[in-house]
Length: 116
Image 1 (tube, rainbow, N blue to C red):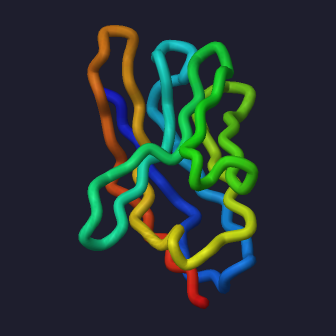
Image 2: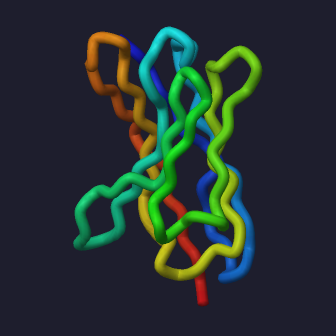
């Protein structure tokens, strides 16, 4: 059982920045991938960014160039640096992890609100 705890959400004005953190009970080096999804009101959950155990990264087209996913040296905390935020980025952001045996785990989410 992998436990994931997100932090760093909040209210920010358009054009501002936030950094989300996801603290994991296991290192990414023992998993396939960790990442961030988001769900806006009335919309489906969508992938924002993910990072593999080998540090390859993927981003949604809508955030490419504005968001950066990274991890700490121990691989137990994954970050999402969000710059140039726009109101459309408003959503609950969920941390996600997939183990080597393809079990999926989710955090409880952290709310990001971008005001115009």
